[in-house]
Image (tube, rainbow, N blue to C red; front, side, top):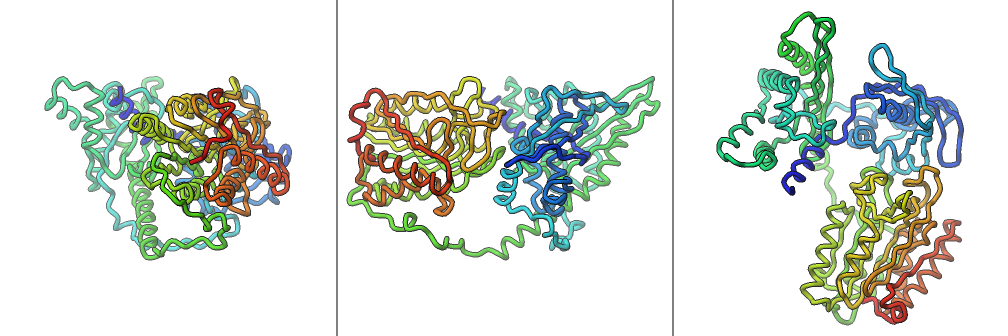
Length: 595
């Protein structure tokens, strides 16, 4: 099962969620202006009925970004056109990987899609654009704004001189996620013929191509009895290339005539970014020689595809050269708050205290959490300098994936077993939290998770159970996150109604005290002036003031008072930290030391 899971993760990562190339209608019309969003009416087409509304939402977003909407921003676009070229990865994630849904939400319930003469489906829907969240994300990503266009300079690397790297050609499994490559090749004659045609045409143009089917067959001959999943995983490892070409092919027949559609995209194996993509279709002709039709489509496709790929590679090489020339020492932050630099030093080491610290700031599918990575880094510094934890006792995870969180939990469980429970544990998390709108269960959001696919998130209930089973002297859980569906600052992560939800309150286990940044229905706000989360800033403040010699009762009283008062003054919103001890230590937790 592990081999199968590895194989499917590899294939899905390469294939991504890349959707069909869209020619956006750019016909969005303003319907209503709101405080943090505006509503437009937008049209979308798709070969798949259910995707027409999604394409309408993407079209509305792209119109706001690059065309402009009358009545919004003076009718001007938000971004410079050069943004697409300068930040291709951003727009690949936005449209191909579905991140657009963070900022553009279809309001029309059960939209109707009508089939058009060309076979596509058309729908018109109302879409809410969360412009404030989008503008913050654009600022964080440093995209060039409208009016900041610059004359494109000729790349330092001549595209015509760039060699296309050795390529591995595979079926595009983005629509058949449960199928393996070899199964798709053996099942689908169209894919098989298209791959053979492309391999021949690439080779004619001097591009080396790996024959995956031949490599697989050779491996099976040399290793008889190997199961298909293990063989495919081994062959994919042996055939590793700098770039992978993913192939989608289909045939259309009508009244004895045949035509084919061939789509390809080149994906960088390291970054998983799409380097180039294109699609072509042949006319319906009176022939049964389908392989010949794919030969014709391949010739026509590669005439544009290879120069496009070379141009993209040249741009990357130019940027890499520029980066090497411009390398400078990492600048030291200026105007640091005394909290960040004046750390009291511990008088003795705490060899049996361990800290797991997670700071999730840069998310793949949702807006960033301001200062979360910085919060985690400076709290780790306090653990080492002020609390006296050795470096080996501190586990710092910046932008933790779901797998990283699993590793962190397994690691601290192993430590507890080796020490026979003779430890104290501090578990700190800064980042997004999300609720299940149906059950109101709360979850931590890994950076690679989607907030609406809760199976990719880590349940708070499970976190309590795992940490509560450690049998440690004490477990202090510090959560600079909220679980109402809001995000640090303004905006919503999940709630379809645009209101915060009150999550279900789970009960800590064992010798645990859970200290959260806000009550169930509140938002955990930043302290922008100090470049920290409000909760974390006053956590650090108390550690500085006390030199780390503080009980959990003293720490909680201080944080609760300071955050409640300062949030009202600075953010003009209530934020009330909460404390929840497990039943086992309900009467004694206040006297427990942090370290």
